[in-house]
Amino acid sequence: MAQFTVTVNATAHSTINTEDTWIELLPPANVSILLKRIRVSFAHTTVSDVPCRIRVTRSSAAGATGTAATFVKRRPASPAAVTGGNVKNGTSAFTVGTVVDVLMDSVVNTRGIFEWVSRDEDDYMTSGVNQRINVLIKVNLASMVLNAECDFEE
Amino acid sequence: MCGQYVVRATVPSLSSSESTFVEIFPPANVQVAIKRIKITFPSTVVTDVPVQIKVYRTSAAAGGSSAGTAISKSPTNATSVSTIKVFTTAAGTIGTIVDKVLDMALNSKGAFEWIARDKDDYLWSNANQRLTITGIVQSGATDVIAEVEYIE
Image (cartoon, rainbow over all chains, first blue to last red; front, side, top):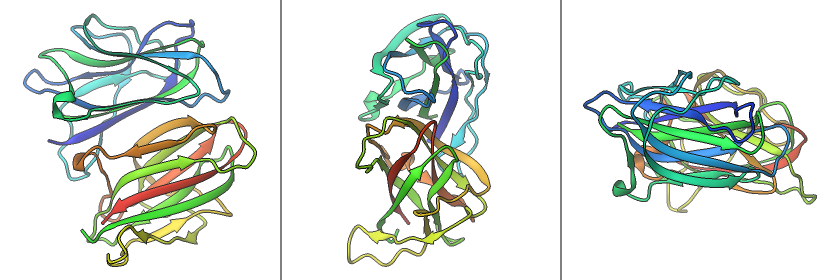
């Protein structure tokens, strides 16, 4: 299976503590995405000391409105990803779609970094049929600049 | 694969211009893969600034250079065949970017380590391309030690 990386550097919601979608992945109906790693880090120019909540969900409907995601191959010789998706676009809001399952819900202080890595193949976060897998973020500081990244196989 | 190697760059006063720390350039018939990256901050005076770290595949060399040394993890391994650059007293400019394979930020009061989870998770080079690790301080300045481990 080929592995891909999606990264986004964007600005949190202009209203404090308002959840946005940062990464929304939608595979074809006959393909499963296996999430292996998620990382959220804080590139804001001013160091802050606030909580940031990160959720990973499956959803049955899209949020609005992101911009098309770029999938970088881990191995350059791999075929292109068949998965589609959107990421948060700068300061634009990207609402949360219809949540079906919450796979992960964690909080980190913005002086730190959050990273989840799957321990083994049973530990992957897997998409459902005709469902999206999403990374949702809200932070206790309006318009904070964040990096979100996920690695997946398909 | 010949073996696993460590490259280290100590960069003084990294500031608000994105600078190359380490550049790994294998021969055309060789692929390299990064397995581990570690970023720490050796300033004797504690700093409290946001630092952004990126890994790119680049198609042209970074500007400025100091030839670097790839230290073999096992003393019996063959010498690395890749050309290594590290940027110390003069932080290097960025070469021509093809892909961005890693992008994250951390506070200089902390430390960061990325480790490949498995072989599919390695950061692989492409033919005639370099693997380049860069950094930038969002505001302020700080010293950085960047360590990269790769296989070829």
